[in-house]
Amino acid sequence: MIGAVRERDAQAVVCFLRRRVRSLSQEALARMCGVAQSTITRAEAGRGLTDRRKAMEALRGLGALDAAEDIRDPEQAANTSLAGQPRGVDVQGSAAETIRRLVSTYDLPEDGPVCPIGELQKDVVEIVRCRLNSHYTCLLARLPVLLPELTRALMTAQGADRDHAARLLVQAYRAMDAIADKLGLHDLSARTIQVMLWAAEQTVDEVTRAAAAYVRGETFFCNRDFHPGRLMLERAAQKLSPATPQEWAAYGALHMRAAVLSARGRAFGRAQDHLEEARSSARLTTEGVYTGTAFGPASVRIHEVTLALEAEDPDQALATAAGWSPPRQLPAERASHFYIDVARAQMRVRRPDGALDALTRAWRAAPEHTRLHPRVTTMLTQLSRAGGSPASAARDFAAAAGLTVP
Image 1 (cartoon, rainbow, N blue to C red):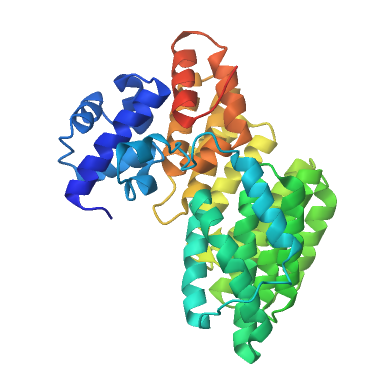
Image 2: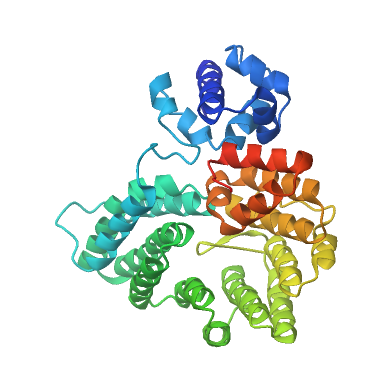
């Protein structure tokens, strides 16, 4: 956490430059951040905030909290987009080149050092945290070094250390897949998942293999092969004999994803069966991250909202979400998913103000995830064409998020 003086200076720089670059009014920027206009006025004057929590919320609302910790001068801040990427750079092309190179040479790492397995474990824990909180720029910076080192560890280690290295490699390639998936690089995502499955085969840990099967489910969503995808997840779940919380979480997560695949395939009865299996598993765990997957009662509830939307029942989705907020321990990306689904439900019942409020909450939870989510752009486009105050608010949101809407 940055110190009080740096916090004040960084906030003033970021707030002023974000508003200048995007041509937003103080009022629009304050609404985007979820703070009072006077907060932005004080920040731009360099006076900072008396409430440290509000300061962090303002920066997080802008998607600039991480960047603020590294700001050295205004020019550096001006050249940083809301998602943390340099302006004028082809982010998608650069990411595609990086991912293609890494998956093409997955078993041919260059010579180099190998840290002790305990140090690699710490690195992967941080990578998983970045993925779960949608810090994709952090992943792009760190994975090109970490993945070859993990592969070297796999190829040189013996016994338990080799198994450990394989499990870490699965999580690292899962993080790489997250970048490809969010940027819409679906062919590269499929190739990355195949490498991840190769890494999973190097371990004897069935829970890790279950986690890899969970991620493989993405390819069936992309190809709209809902029935085969559900069968694959069911078979992966059948290989488990859950007894520990971690095993129950792996089992429940597979059924949770199978529920959504079933719903997409219009098999709503089967979807509810899978959801009930996931709900029963969640009763035997607490909400947490298990082998890189968020699972627990809150995650299941969020999927209940998703299934109601898939069943074209936005009223049920809103009823499930009513009076509930994702707990703090839930990863930011999962919380953002929840609010985006709430926004979708609000749009379907023709409540534009409710949709914008939910989108703002999604942005505060995970700015990069929200900005890259295709449904967000669709909703903002619809709202911007509606006229009136919702249209103006939608355009302000899109401008602050770095999105282009017609």
